[in-house]
Amino acid sequence: MTYEVMAADLQHLITQQGMIDPLLIGHSMGGKVAMQFSQTYPKVPHKLLLVDIARKAYDMTRLAKILLTLRHTPLQGLRTRTKVDQYLRRSIPEASVPLYCMKNMCCNAQGQVVWSSNIPILADSIPHVEQAVTFRAPFHKPALFINADQSDYIQAQDLALIKAMFPKYVLKRVILDTGSTTIRLRHY
Image (cartoon, rainbow, N blue to C red; front, side, top):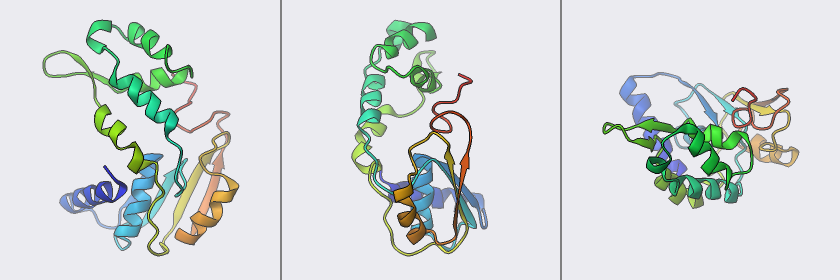
């Protein structure tokens, strides 16, 4: 799974649905997909709205460890959300992350608790998704970057790279008194 493949999937969806001049909104990895889409299919999107992401490479060691934990979580043996939460907290110290991960639990057709996300594919894709978005040419349409006040996903040194790819970018900082806009929300 690469950003180029995900951008092609998105193009297929947009074409299939008959969308014209879509506004693409992406958070984190979805933001990188939207950026890559703007590079591969620059005439398609009308605007971009990108949340807590820059076009740079990111160290995904922490995410790789979380995915490894999820991959080896014995969901069938744990049976309750409380037990899954307790199991995950042994390997994932941040209080809100196990709860966030558990949003991806569901029941399959056989009534078994499973992860709704394809954890093995995500884990195996880390070397690809931690990379920077491929820069081809400036995207000369509006691109709004939103960054939470305590998030470190967009830093001052990233702005030159953002401006090179998105000359019409605007950066807005939102005050949430949290880190990443979705991962660390207080309402879990």
